[in-house]
Image: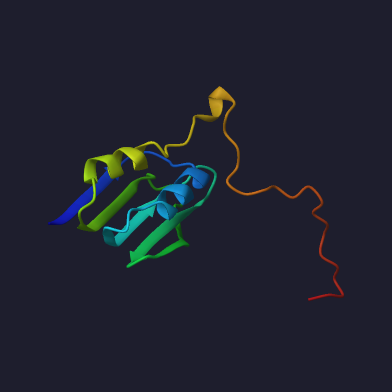
Length: 118
């Protein structure tokens, strides 16, 4: 049986959780696309799946626009409602509760560029 489910939420996701979700998509999901707002990132995160190949990439800057998450999953013999529940579970924690961490390591040893180097 062919199935399709869509996701539309006004939330931000945790990058590590999103990456884990993408990597664990069931084989029954043949095609998927999405745009995600990820906590701590100024750019949109674009998601694309064809067959078993997954791609997460950077998109345009949000530039003060309302942040959102949208996705569409197409395939056969997969639990669509369970998949959407798992994606909702990737929501980022609020920075107020102290559990927020940036989605990438911060460098503390940033040095100014030397003018004699390109």
